[in-house]
Amino acid sequence: MRAALLMDPSLVPFVFGAETQARLGDLLEIDLTDAATSLGGIPEPSGVELLIVGWGATIDAADLDAFAALRGVVHWSGGNGALDGAAARRGIRISSARAANAIPVAEFALAMITLAAKDAFWASRAYTAEQRFIDREAELPDTGLYGTTVGIVGASTIGRLVLQKLRGSDARVLLYDPYASAADADELGAELVDDLGALAARSDLLSIHAPETPSTTGMISAEVLAALPDGATVINTARGALIDQEALVAELQRGRLRAVLDVTEPDPLPAGHPLYALPNVFLTPHLAGSMGNELRRLGEVALAEAERFVADEPFAHPVP
Image (cartoon, rainbow, N blue to C red; front, top):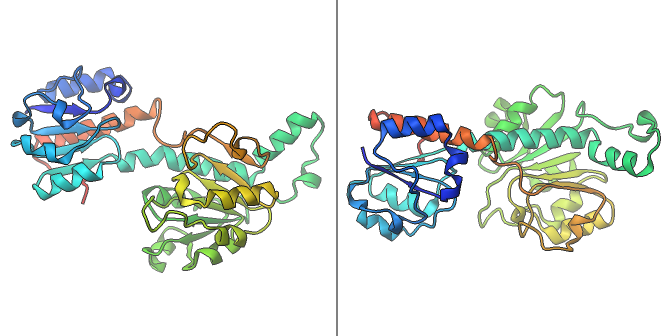
């Protein structure tokens, strides 16, 4: 079966290790040294039956017209709307490694929630700057997840994983998601709250896991931020555009809130932005998603889906 890679060529050895490449070579007629960055860059497209797609590809869905034999698209990344919509309309089967990519994001988010609840970032800065004994009980009397209220925004694939990981933490967990039911929330060990401001008002930590869409842009508004209790922490591993960043900066400059931000708007921030210097901000350069060793998980998921495709079996992770 003839297949082609559609991705940034420099990422191939990071996503597909030697063993995975060997198995793909045994399974498919594919040149793993010749990844294209556009559909138009794939030679002899009429014979390609399977596309393996990832980051770094520029998609012009109209170029699918040249792929007369194409029957499957396997994303080792989260998927591409323009390609997927056009392919679905042609009856082409599509798979996505979105669930696999959600794993490191959920792990990272849970770590940030735990460390923020423990006051680890702020205690570390005080300890380093002042170089003295820190009287934990006197100076940090309200630390730890036990009895803390965590507000989760979005029961997405990542949000659900975070909720599942929080179940044994003894934290009180709230969920805001207009598409989730009370039964969904109960199954995930959370209390459903149907108003975002009301959820914020009860949250010591607010962790954001909604997708970026026109309806979610700016959803963590000035009003939502104002509803958070003094000393609350905003944690964002989703997309920077979900937060009214100017309103967040204003709250942080007043010292009323704290923030743990893996994403910003824009991403990266321009040099000199106040978020770089505020002492109540823990800023990371978009680390949560798959990177380094974690990319191999995505390649292995893509290989497993290609094996199913060749065997004419349903995908384990189909895109609806």
